[in-house]
Length: 335
Image 1 (tube, helix red, strand yellow):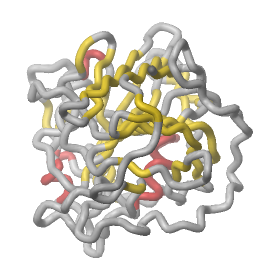
Image 2 (cartoon, rainbow, N blue to C red):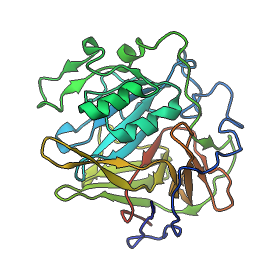
Image 3 (tube, one colour):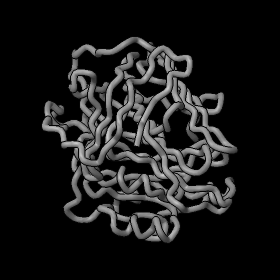
Image 4 (cartoon, rainbow, N blue to C red):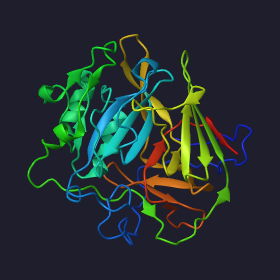
C-alpha cells in the first residue's frame, strides 16, 4: 500500500511516500515516558475527580448532513474522523476525562473501528448496529459492547430529528456498564511539558476534502492564536455542536491512509470502505499554531500509533483535546 499526501496549493508538500507494512518493529520508547502524573491519559490535562481510573468509552457519531449538529464532540478527549460510504465521514469519539449528556447521534460500526479500538485497553464501545459480517468482528474484538442492541435502555430517540439520525445516549449511562477491573487506556500521544516551547513551521490553515462520487465532506481548520485552538469548519460553515459551540481542538493530527473496498455495500448499494491504519505513512501534526511534518507508524492492531518527526523523535502535542483526521491520499493542503 502506498500512502501519500498532496499539497493542493498549500505551503507544505507531504514527504515522499514509501510502502506501508504490517511488520514495522514496535517503537522502543515508551508512550508513557514523561507523561504528567495525575493527568488524564488522553489529554494530559489534570484528571477531573472520579475519572482517573475510568476506561475509555468510544461512541460512533454520525456526520451526515442530516445528523448535524452533534452532541458531545466538544466533551470528547479525542475525536477521529474516518471516511465511510461515498464522501461521508463518521466520528470515532473517545471519552475518558469528561462526560457528555446527551451524546450522538449514534450510528453503526465499521471495520476501521476494530483496529482503532484495539490499543485502548478494552474500551466500552457504543454504536447502533452494523451488518452481520462486521458484527462478527465487533463480537471478537477486545472491547465491551455497550451498543444499542446490547443495552437498549441506555438509548433514546429524539423526536425532533428524522431516523436514523436521532439515536442518543449519555456517557454516564454508558460508563455504568464498565466491568469490574476495567482500566484506563494508555496515552496515545506525547505531550509538551509546561513551559516547553513548540517546534514546527508557523501555519494558520488546514484544508481537507473527503471526496466521494456523489458527496464530498470539506473540512477546514483555522488557527485562533488568541484562544490557542484550531477552529473547525465543514462544508463552508463553522462546525457548531448542539450547544452552539464551535468545535475547536488544541491539536489536529492528520494521518494519510489508503481506503480499500471491503466488498460490502450499504442500503444504497454504495461500497463500504476500510481505512488501512496499520503500517506507516506521512503525518502532519498541527499544534500551537505550527506544523510538524512527520510519519505515523503502527506495527499491528494492538500497537499504539506513533507520530515522529524527521529525526525519529516523538512529536509532542499541546495538552488538551485532539482531533485525528484520516483522509485518503491527495486530499489535503495547508498554508
